[in-house]
Length: 287
Length: 304
Image (cartoon, rainbow over all chains, first blue to last red; front, side, top):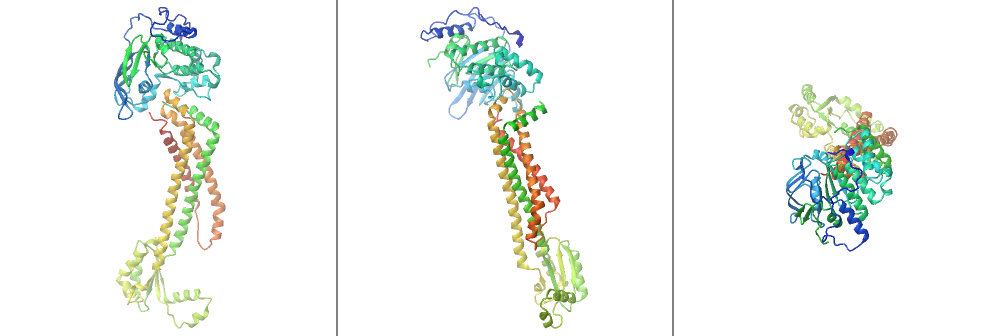
């Protein structure tokens, strides 16, 4: 996969052939200059109208007939089958309780499926021994709505912690951590504690931590759920840049504006079933 | 994956320094639990020595008729000597018995003077290896033909054997109960300290549950997560055990002689070897409890 040096650090005009404005009919927002600006920002991140012919790369995620029941009556996920290729950028949308979180936690093997098969980054989760789960998780970066930073560690230490606990040497830590913090735009605040950072900055630290190990897959569970629209846009730009290095990105979200403007692949879950799976999809719900 | 020992010791000592109030609480808990356990083990050993002393005073006396043949006496004596339950057999002649009687009655010479001749029978005094076997040995004596021929009271041979029938039975019931209570007490204390220590470690882990959640998320192996907590538990248990041993040694050196003086009529002794054994038990038990407590407390946070 791509190295840090392959990054296009100048990410103006990321998608030159993006549609100039929000497609009519999907954005129901009343006229508001600030929202327009944000919508234009997301639109810049939109997928090209004509997809570059994709080389059918190896699959990053392959889910077959996944069913998960917590109790006997209603399934949280029922017969879900989906493939996600390496390098894709995918939104998962759906109401609360539609099964988004269960889906993401199943990919991390935090929940064990009632039935069905999951292959993530080459690991068949069904055949994965418990002692090997840590090695699966080293291939998956995780970003959460509540950041999950350690309050008594600085930004540097929070990111370094992820490398420490998988046994990386001091030398590796001292080179990779500043690099990834520069990538997320926090080189000035490397020694700040989470309480001294804004919400957006904390989420950048959390993304840095998820990405410092260069995992091929990044799972984001409502990464912008606690952030204002302007800050959310910044986070999405960051995730887009990371995607450009070849990292597969999967985002569960409630942010209608973001999904409708970016026009990436959208998988919609409803009551544990896949309701839609569209390339260049939209949010499609009236909340 | 091998764990860097510097990381391990560093994590354990850092957490010890940062959470020293909680660590101190854990150490005191472990110290008191182990001290209670040590004291009850020590008390058990003291009571045991006391019980053994009382039981060793149990012996069997077989009274012999004046006209018994010395052959028959020898037969019974040899039978008893070859009995595996018997430690020693002593023959006390009529004259020796009277001498002993005179010595014990020294303070009332008028009693001795009023006795004409020597009314006391000769006897065989039998000491046992284990006092609890007394009834069995008595039965064997009664079954012996030689005994029937030499018994002091041929009409009722059982009255020629004296071993304090009822007293012995009650004594053993008492000493057995004492032993059983001691064992139950130690077991209960062990359970209590396990629960205490488990709770203390659980609190320490609960305080760091976010850290553990993140460690799991970024793919730290379970042993990597577990090891610092276990090392911390062992360090705390070791310090607690050492404190308990110091306190117990004080009891051994200062307390025991005073107790012995207070109850001089009974022999209470706890040998230094027993004290060493108890100390070792406390250290090993403390470490085991520390590790087991940590593993149990961590289980739910490491569930996959």
